Image 1 (tube, rainbow, N blue to C red):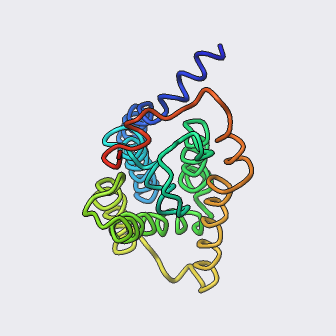
Image 2: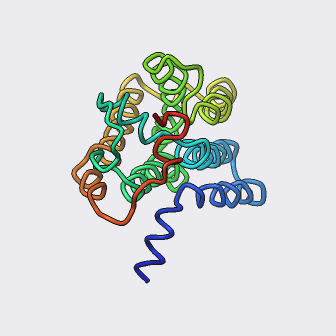
Length: 212
């Protein structure tokens, strides 16, 4: 049983493609509101985003260490990051930021946070990573720019009703997704999982086009 778990975790990015297909099927078949469909569309592209970052072309792990942590360390054994911590962080973030508003549709602030974070992905992949790396492409660029961003543009130009929000709702939305980011990617839980053995990245997942 333990070996099956490890094998599944070590293929979490590939599993994300099948999860994207399943969510897309649900979005098509279920009777949902437009806002719910946009949230499910975001989930679809986020699963594909994980695949782009950690499977093909891959390389987000090393890029994240280099850009977000400021460490140009090519030895992944020194990263305190692995498939287990990456699955926990990415899938956990998806559940809290994108699935939670589906469960509590009356809490519009949760949907606001999800749609605002789509733009945060745009800033990270279009500006931050490309400027720091001096490249035109980085792992996750395509799904962030051409997937998540159009969804939020459509939401804010077509569905969004500013009259139901006060200024502090925007602040709370930002604080919420910053807290969830910390919980999923910077908390002791994340770093602890990253130290566990048996969940190493493949060369493709770790370095992709950034391999020395």
